[in-house]
Image (tube, rainbow, N blue to C red; front, side, top):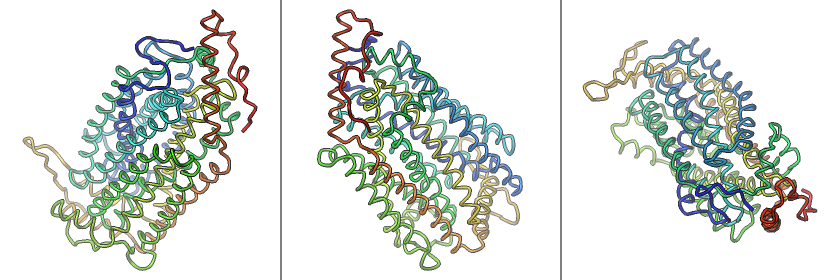
Length: 572
């Protein structure tokens, strides 16, 4: 039934224990590394002092970075189908997916190190802009290679619904932990060690861990043996199959569109929320507040995703999706009302900002968890929990669509189908970048971030006799780093009005994209639990027939495709 490749493979639907332990949890370091670039690269460029301290040059450099990263969509549009095509068509002795996972991680580690180390090495201004963008394209290429190999391996490991739900839940939990760790580090460290030092150290550590984790997949994990007929179909893959598969498989198309919208909505708050708290509370205090919110992110997401396997035993995918959606809408509307200054100069859920910088972690925590902030954390916990469930259902639906594609059209092609996931990620990230900069422009808050970046550029960390020392070089009458940060906050013309606009734009867009995504899935997605059970049973029957034919000496070319050998009269 399957094409064997020796000890590197297993048969059946029961995933080996070592593979089950290593594969999902390696996602911690994958997503930590992705978050460093995908979420914080633009933040690093804006606030670390690697760009010009002249406002005119700084603005021009930011425009070039923003435009170039959006133009990178063109490369993404080519890169994802190329990588999906390569992974699907060309297989190595080491497996169909594992070699691409390893190669991609090696290139990714090199690119990430270059992006975050050239700044501390003295490359500044336009020189940094050019180098950063070149390394960004390099990173994008290799991460896509790794990403498609990694996520395509997930639906190929098992067809069993329970095993799939468990493995998917663990994988998404791991990615949540990875993103959380990087978010909390990047929210907290820059205000303590300085931006350049924090990002450089984080880049070195996370790149090494990412590379090691992916090497463990390559050397210790096993791929599932592949059906001989599907192996032949994979070798005949064409470049344009990426579009053919969503053109014929309408269920997959709906999930792809919904996932794109999800990535926009889920990334906006984490990608822009840090800056909101800088604007509300200042650079130092805002960083602690954003760090506390990131704790709610991981708690809400992990709890909801850990409960998912148990929820599937009592509720259908659509019922779980609906509950998650309702929680998201209610929580975000509440967050808008209490987290932004809708009813006065300050938000309902706020705390008084001390006049001086925090003297220690105790004072910082006292501020972050004092006042009415508990209301913020409650709403954050809820909408992160709802988003976590929403995403997990999306991922399971995505894998079910691959089973459906093999069942209905005789072609599985996991790598081609899953090429849409990283493309969704990057399209969503690019859209978020555009929304982010448009928000700063419309609300007139870009000038504050420019002032923070200028302050960081004059607050230079360096090592002296084994000790990390930070020296502030005075400018424009600012004698200390805190003086400069306080001066940055005076750049806001009408703080109350600007923050209200900020809230309406960001929360409004988040609600719209989640509503559209939910409607697409609720009214258009038809692969329910009963149909998935039929699909799995029919595919098992087909694979058994293939095994029998191969044993009888029938050539693979003469084995009928699934659509010819199994009854599938249902059209979705």
